Image 1 (cartoon, rainbow, N blue to C red):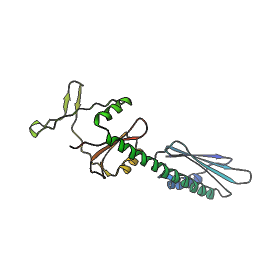
Image 2: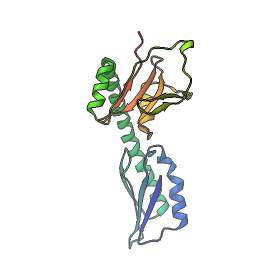
Image 3: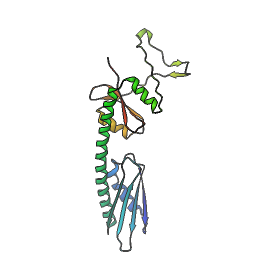
Image 4: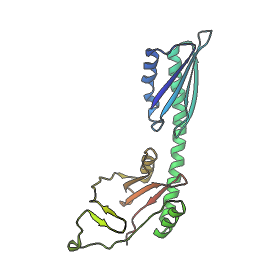
Length: 211
């Protein structure tokens, strides 16, 4: 996250910039996906300082203002206000995401594999699935496997240590990542689960069907 500091009727000194950067960690946990923050500092003819913080390009936005005759005290008040705003919005957003994740999980649990595939194709995402019977030790393949029909190779599997998470935490983890899916062990049922981003902005949940 970068901070853009704009001064009106005053110069932004290194001391001011360093003080602002020292205070930013207080709101950093709420702005993990924010690329930039705008801070405007204005000094009027009465030697009064007005400071304004603007965050507009992340999952939460905030516009906080403060005034004081002492600039550093004004910045402290501003950060206090911004932190309170961000915390309220963050908690509200987490509640909304939790409910959406629960609704998506219930919906996907009721759907069969064919319905999930049809839904993905309708959304413009082509999903090619192929069921393979389990091979015995005698039938074990030697990697890489060449599939001539598509002129591609299936490379050896990579070992991946999956986190064990409840669904709510997994949804929150994916929300703050740039990836489109997250594989994890569902703490609630012990299953290998995959959360993915849907076209409508919600998350879908895929779990193996064990017979």
